[in-house]
Length: 136
Image (cartoon, rainbow, N blue to C red):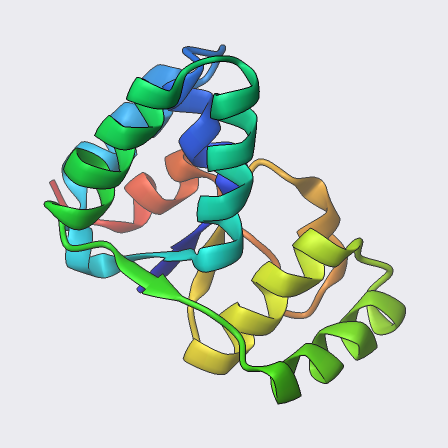
């Protein structure tokens, strides 16, 4: 199972440079193999509404997340204390530490373009790296 970081979703939603890599990744995996944090959903919603793309966010929620069966995961208040430890231990900012702590809690592989995860024991994979590990 994979925890898909917000930068992966935004790469596709905002039609950025690696959107085709992300599209192939999302098309090749079942939604139930993917997770997104509640924190990422809020971050994506904030970014898209600031860009006046509320309809895109609504479509993303309905079609990409809910209909595909992507798991939405979160931390409890007690687990936020663990997050603070991760910020210090691995020199992560708050949002990266949130993703990392969730990945630890649910034993998920982090899929991200963010190289900050490379200095953690769990590491990260890009969509292209994940695609190389699955059979066609």
